[in-house]
Image (cartoon, rainbow, N blue to C red; front, side):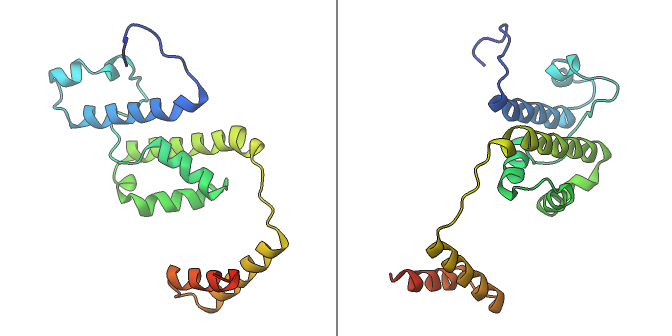
Length: 161
């Protein structure tokens, strides 16, 4: 931030960045010794409330959670949560981290439902693409252990190249 005395403008696109900065501060704060200058001079000392998490023992970022929700294109909380727990098992290690991560998932789902989903335009494949996709789906169903290169070879053969 170039001018710390000037208030930041808050745009929808900047929210993940600011949340990630907050998570970084929580990680730094938790690693500092209690009573140290690092804790006393932390910006979090001015932000904490009685119910605020005082640590976040995960490397997850809010931006990553939001990208995951958008990439999956679903509002199925349990699907997203299961993926995150496999990605970072540290989520279950600390109640504060768990509570904050659950809140971040809820916020990402709300953001997706309010701003991404309404503006989304679904792609409708052409008839030729539909045939290719069906052939690929049939191949993957018949060969669940197939490698990506094998599936691409099938698609290239269908396309004539």
